[in-house]
Image (tube, rainbow, N blue to C red; front, side, top):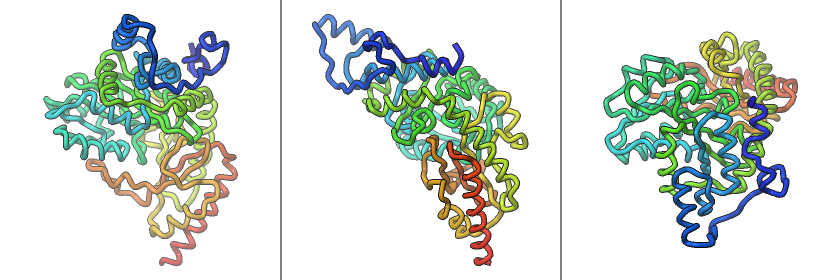
Length: 394
């Protein structure tokens, strides 16, 4: 079954719901059982991983539909849903780390991942260290005897370094550690982490899977070896996603392919336009042929999403702010992955410890589904504001 067919069919069971195409929303906490024997049998089956309805927090047909679709698309053993992407990251960390353990994290990871490691995990006695995302197989030199988890993100947040995921996974496994990756940028459609050696693939499904900026959602797909610890920790922490957000996530998945195709097309058009502008030092987008990570991206990925960053030539902060503040079609917002275009000054680069940012002002753009001609006209006016404000400051 090809991915486009998986997107439209996985998780659906019209025969179970009177022929209804989409699995309905189940609002449920209490689930009644006809006898003690039936209750105990359902509970045993659920603990073994079967899709048994025993209690709302343990899953409903709504959550199972979404999780089955994601796991099938990623080629994993099973998936679990969470109320946010950060919750999904935390669930993975807490499932495989304990006091005295060490986690090795790529320095280009999502900012809240840094804060989780340096905050809660540190208080729990877990050691965290960061590595250059471009070291590939040299990761082996960073491994310690107590390294239990290696955490990747490719491309990296805000700076979009592409990792050699397969090489990093081989080094991690040789050192006895599991490998988790934040795969939000590419989605399960454009990158298959488990096929490249990862044990767990994490998504802020709030982004491209939901696709409409109206629901919070996280999801983790695990291989068989990693599944039971993830499932146990998730249940013990009482983590579960809301039924309405689950429904929106599984509905959003049905159009993921056509949306990402347009996001990539529009992003490439705008990225190339930025490259032609004298105010721009460089565009950080792996799909561009001159990007340092392009060869790895072309080898491993099936496509690119609509998110990239632009490094501007030196300019006062007030000039960058003037460019952003007057944009008409770009909302200033911290998320991305919806149908709309967004802009955000990059601030998480301040958390880098191994690869500190040494370039000029960095701004992240998410290119939505608008006509790129309108977006480029809007950005052109923004760059005019930038030049005027820079001249005034000088």
